[in-house]
Image 1 (tube, rainbow, N blue to C red):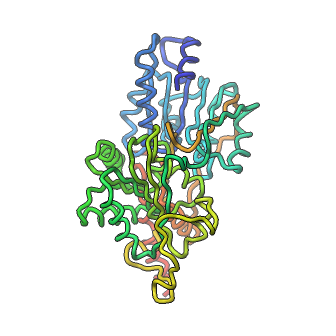
Image 2: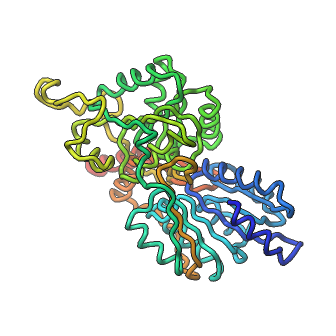
Image 3: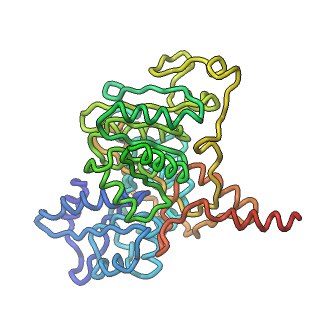
Length: 428
């Protein structure tokens, strides 16, 4: 943040009537937008030249944000959806942007944000500096960077793998019906804060309710909750009022929460990159931490893929052969969360963001922007059965994207009921 603020001070504003937006920071989640905005505002407060920093994100009313943008701003931190809404309402202009920062660039360049990102890039000037930051940059994402960068320089700090010197990692082999009892055991062994990752919104809520009924002070955060609920749960977790936070991947990227003693993968992540970001929530700023993953018989191969460990690796907490310990057959179990989360889930709020301190490595790219790209409309999920399947996949990913507007994010489990009724009525 400091180098780019220094560049803003070196080039004075062209006009005093309205502040042009010279620095635009794009982030994938609301919580990360708030965190980055607060840091930039604190740094800009004592600069010799005053810089106005505004933060805009979805899930809350757009009117206060429009009022705050009157007279312009030097720095804007935004989620892509709300930024485009404000552009459509002529609340801000992006034609004077000199520096574009994509925080958690791998997630912003993913398909979930592709249409919105292309629309934003089409509104920016051709001559600008573009910087991409992320703890993980998969090869597929690296290929996409050529569209946005010209003669880029790559800077890598540390490793892109979890810090095994500071993080004690293990996995526990369980069947689905054992997960609740096992996580309760692990939590009661510890006195520090515990961050638990579940796959879907429904599983997150059910697990948080189960822990609360078992006498554990636990909060929940996911894309289906309102912004005030999400911020309240996050602040309660930060100050220790609730020592356990159950979350989807909305909390896996960039959030700077110090002194997390344990990270639990109640459900395994979908990719190696998500695993690195989840585990990176602990052992920050030189501290030590622990990460435990629950692995069902059906997820053995997935575990090897996301953890990067082969069959011969030894891990703490293994239970041995499933068939031998469960009467000759493995049970998937339907007791808590055994079924699939289903829904249209149009709005994703994926938890990603800039990681500081001890997260496993940090990579950045910087270069000049290629220029304007074609302006594209934001995609909408298809109707009928195809739309139903798309919703199911989004709900299974456990992430809801910032689509903003006054309604904010909508839970992905509301659409199919009406669809199923109509389907069976038609079939009969």
